[in-house]
Figure 1 (cartoon, rainbow, N blue to C red):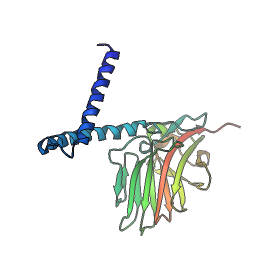
Figure 2 (cartoon, helix red, strand yellow):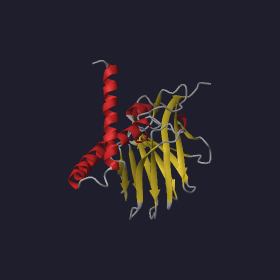
Figure 3 (spheres, one colour):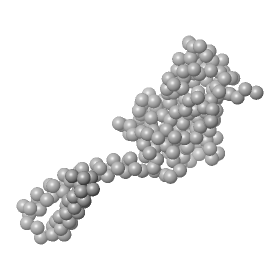
Figure 4 (cartoon, rainbow, N blue to C red):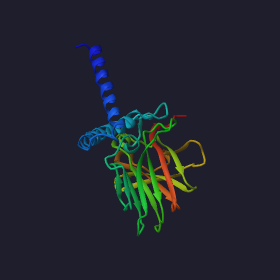
Length: 257
């Protein structure tokens, strides 16, 4: 059978099934109870599959596209990256009463020193047209009796390999908050027994939230770099909701003057 013939037949079967279920729905008030019971069982089974299809279709067809790694980056960047939490659906999308050192995905870890945790983390689906990242991260903080709260993002090996003091490392973010607070980004680079740290405050009042780490001002030993990670440090986070709509990283060599 040709594809055209198959599509025609498939359309006829679909239309006939729609008519059959529409008729069953109209007559449900007067249908014999034994038949109605069978129809209900079949309808529930069908609804399960339809709900799953609709959920998956909404997930895949909504903007932006799942798995997207598209975002603005310097033209001479030799590495760029969007962490998996902002790129694709996680098996466990959220955590409540989050304990310190809890991970959401394989790259993001929450640290705090609260005695009683009233923190939640949840991955969100971004649906706004202006969003480039498929997913975002929502952090809800209620009562906070600790002295620090930080979200750690481990940079992949590709971002560490070949890292030199001539590099500029850039972090871009889209942040939403219920009320103002300060957020600091601390770059940590482990080289041998030492860890180099560079701290920048996120310019949350600006439209483009971007910080750069100039490694020329570090004491990093290029030959002994082992790993790197970013701490996002939240100052005074109690009774607040913070949404990280996107988080991306890139690096580029500094221009020679």
